[in-house]
Image (cartoon, rainbow, N blue to C red; front, side):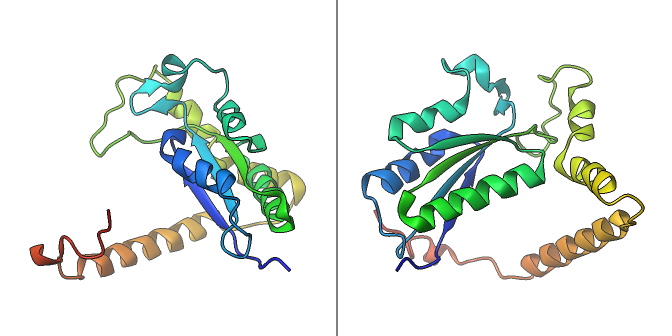
Length: 188
């Protein structure tokens, strides 16, 4: 009987997932050890360059074929589509079907690094992306599915923001590690 253990490896670049993809497929780890769901967030850019300018394939989901991993491409701005893809991949893995690669297409709303003014992006692209971001799409979908049902999204955002600020404040209270600990838990 397979244990219900799953791991979701979510990244913004498939290059960093290649060892995970290889390990998940080649070693065929038993599901009781680990089930792999490989998710790639395709956010238009590889750092500051459109990803299509630096690859020879039309869709990044095609890379999964090199590992003989089943793949699916979803609208990464649609939380329902992402949830369904992850659920199906999880079920497939837990039933012995191995890993699944999920490409979630979305757009980056902020720069690649702190202070990135995103001058490489065409005018209007960021504003258009903000109109399609997952929370906006979710709110629009919920309004269509449950007309008349009112949800205090601003209250939810305020609560989440407060939780983030509390977590950051708590993290800042943690003492800096000593330089002597630099090599602890390092294995090569």
